[in-house]
Length: 93
Image (cartoon, rainbow, N blue to C red):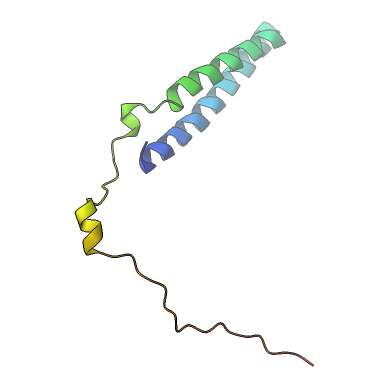
């Protein structure tokens, strides 16, 4: 899953859980049944999980472009400089 896919999955999860919470509360209130409210919300959580957790193809629309191994050798990893001295705090007396 790419970065935009992760963002989309997170947004879908939040929207779907909020929508199912409202639907479940309304259903439970109208039917005067706490059990129906819990079952409706549990079904919504299961459906949300099935939509957002698997790595569906629509979450991979912007794949990352990795460098080829030969490109990595052309651009070596930068080394930290050795001439940096740490700053010392002045002692207060």
